[in-house]
Image 1 (tube, rainbow, N blue to C red):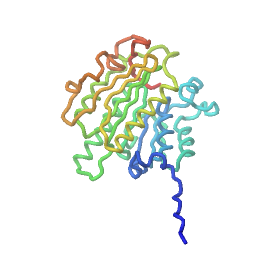
Image 2 (cartoon, rainbow, N blue to C red):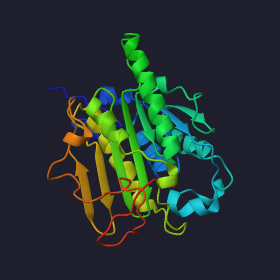
Image 3 (tube, one colour):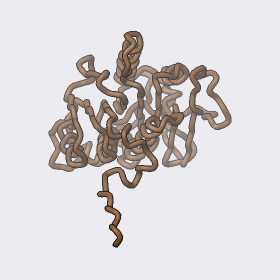
Image 4 (tube, rainbow, N blue to C red):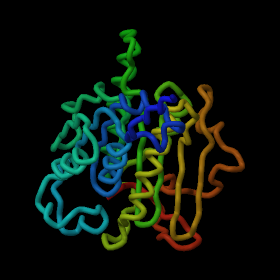
Length: 284
């Protein structure tokens, strides 16, 4: 008489268990600052994948103009975005969620998170988030803490049908320098017309690309420090991964952009067309 082999119960991770390190995924602590077009989609993706802890920071409430580009139900108009995201993500997975319905500030405990995602629409705020995260990381190193947090910083920028994704491992000085070179003032940013600023399909792509970089970090794969996609023209620009000794001046190669890409020429006023890429300063 033979005994039937017990069938292993299906789990949330079955379809990607051979792709991702599930223990690392299920203990990941992620903080998203800005849960509008990109951040809203990103929060849903990370929750569905089964992370451990999600922090969401945004002081805005939902307006009617947000419904199309940010994919909110009409019943949420007038509600804080973080409240809506918390409700949605709680339905997707049993995870710990911390909400901050305030502008980003020192009140946000970035040291409680391993992965920081900047999905904001102001360069000044983006710079403040990066500086806060790297300062906390450096302080943890100086104190010789066994667990160093945060460890990774991801930045998403979008304008209409163009998105730019930047990934920064904090233990790679070359990546830090490369990211700093992408920053500029809000006064230099090209904002474009308010009726041609944001699309939900571009935001969804940006959120997916952020998740892809996140999963590469879990697998200890080299990250793509700077990627730009223009959906209208079909153009794609990519900067090669940085080595610990690399710097922005040494990171060029035939696969790097040979013409100004989004946000690298902030004062340009060229609008998106099948042959051009519009500068990106925000993810509205």
